[in-house]
Amino acid sequence: MEEFLLNNYGIITHSVEAMAAITGVFLFKLYKNTEVKYFIYFLVYLTICDFFGQYKNYVDNGFLNFLKKTIFATNHWWSTSYWKVGAILFFVFYYSKILKTVQFKNIIKISGYAFFFFSVIYIALNWGKFFNTFFPIISILGAIIIFLCSVFYFIEVLQSDKILTFYKSINFYISFAIFIWWLIITPLVFYDIYHSNDDWNFIFLKWQIYLFANIFMYSTFTFALIYCKPDSKNE
Image (cartoon, rainbow, N blue to C red; front, side):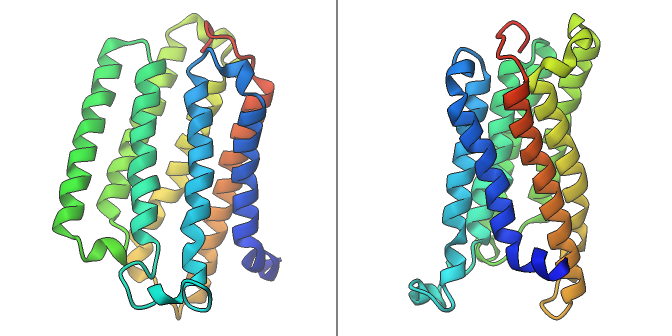
């Protein structure tokens, strides 16, 4: 089992990710009049960015070996840009669309602007590390924003008639999935300082956690797109 996961980690992750994006594309017409269309765009964006992020696999022994001794030899910069910063900004945008409470919307927007400017300044001040490591502070701040988005949505559901039909809303499943994903993954940031290529037990454990968290999140997205009704009033 461990050998199978080790050899197929990338394939499994990309497959469940692409499955959610392809499902969204096929069902796009059902959601084109709701805010969910932006989420479908986001799934496609993630799939494309993740595909290009695999360029690092061709640096050591592939057609991109000319990048071997450059700052682009690893994809830390790419992952930080499109996921650790880009994904957070998307959810700020998305929840500013679906939240109804003005105070919640304002908090999310202000937090998003602050996060963006902080990330840009922090990366600029640590430009050399941007290409060979991840920044825990950016990951943690991003997780806080995700928790704010999810919690604000859950509060609105509890305070409205949506509580009676919450299980029919795709935004409930999106909020639940991203909340759980970031709750599971964020603690790993604190252990990155112990990361070593010699400690394969830790590396494999980390891969397992990421793999099962990704399967859970993207499978939930796929299920929600198929199961939920694209009623703009419900969303």
